Image (cartoon, rainbow, N blue to C red; front, side, top):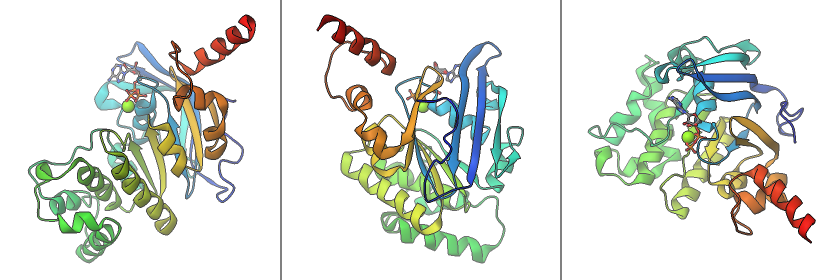
Length: 279
Ligand SMILES: Nc1ncnc2c1ncn2[C@@H]1O[C@H](COP(=O)(O)OP(=O)(O)OP(=O)(O)O)[C@@H](O)[C@H]1O
Ligand SMILES: [Mg+2]
């Protein structure tokens, strides 16, 4: 268990794409939400950022994509680097041009636009029409469902299709990394599998790095190579996804094994101490 970035986040991927180093985030000048968060996101990695309500997952994503300002938030300590270059003062549009794209929680498709029009809005940083057309075909190859729904208004498509549309729109920017905020939220398990399989496919074939902020620990650890667990604005545990998935404390608290009154990962520890004490 450590607060510092892991030395080797994935055996297949050495150089980190993004390094988040001890960041603090404050909202409205007073509300301290992130209290020294460090992460490494390797090239071609899939990293899960796990934790319950209010743990700070979305805030961490917003800090990386610099979508904090609209929320009256700011990084007040620490640094964020993209391929060794500081990025915490770049605008969200500059970050998109450098390949850092966030898919926000709740999907945010334009309801009155068709699926294809939504996808094309993702290409706003690019001018070459031939490239945009080729990208659209690429997105359709990964998301065949979107191709069949290309002329449907987003408002009339399913939650799964809207999530696919939101990810497809991010892919239209040719990103190096996609920050996905709760992609599984509100979706049936088989649709979550479908979405995550496409994420894995994009990661394999395009080399896109993904950071998955998820409360669905089980599913996220199944697809990620590495995971971080957050609580109250701090990383409380990190490790290779398979190790986290088989860790007894993670299983007990996040995978619902056992029951009772515990409200946090730390509570699991005190509960276990108490269990030993009472035994
Ligand atoms: N714009 C904001 N202004 C003030 N406080 C905020 C703002 N956004 C989030 N917070 C607070 O920051 C903390 C972390 O919130 P955040 O949304 O990052 O958590 P999360 O892990 O994404 O939670 P969830 O799983 O519910 O989405 C919470 O206490 C939340 O109330
Ligand atoms: Mg969130």
